[in-house]
Image (cartoon, rainbow, N blue to C red):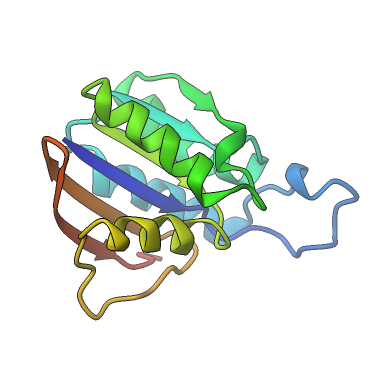
Length: 154
């Protein structure tokens, strides 16, 4: 199984919207979303999960459209959520045998990855989490095997 942890692409300025969850991608973010779709298009992906924040939804919509998949909104991927809740969603997905994409925020992805490191995943020296970046984690059964980082491509 493979999971892809995507940090949402570049979005407008924080504070420019009364409801931050309604903040859309900016021009650079839209280009990053298309680059993410290109990067992951050949990967086996069964499901796309995202935070309900608009910037996350817009980040994975091009990929989902390319693959003919729906985007499943998950509150456990929301900004400020518990990394343990997000990891529980990932574990449920892996248990169901899904190759999945999880799009979330800069406060959650590092914490989820740290929980995976605590379970034996080696991230190497690349401890980056830029907007529009992707961490791909491969598993063999319950064992975490490898992780690779794809930086922001635009």
